Amino acid sequence: MSEWQPIETAPKDGSEILAFARGNRDFYGVAQWAEAQAAFNSVAGWFWTFAIRPTHWMPLPEPPK
Image 1 (cartoon, rainbow, N blue to C red):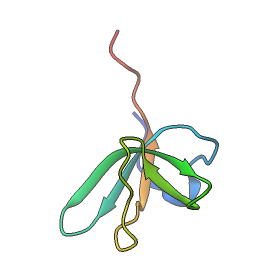
Image 2 (cartoon, rainbow, N blue to C red):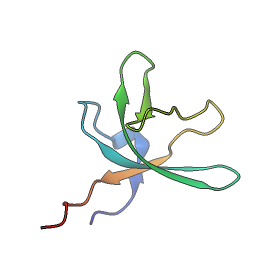
Image 3 (cartoon, rainbow, N blue to C red):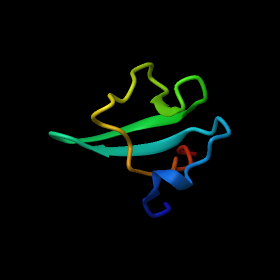
Image 4 (tube, rainbow, N blue to C red):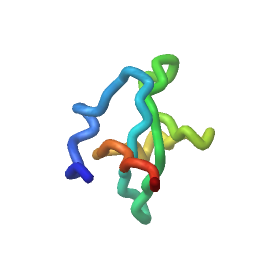
C-alpha cells in the first residue's frame, strides 16, 4: 500500500480514495472529489465538516482475491 500523501495531491477525477482527517479523534473514510462542494466527500453519504477536512489520502488497497 502507498504512503499517506497530502490531500492537495489527491485525484479529482472521481476516483475513490482513503482519506484521513484529525479532529477530536482520527477519521478515516472512503471519499471522492465532489465538484459541487469543491471538497472531498465520503462515498458513504456523509460530509466532512468545515472544521474537519481531510488532510491526507492514499489509494484504496486491492480487494481480496
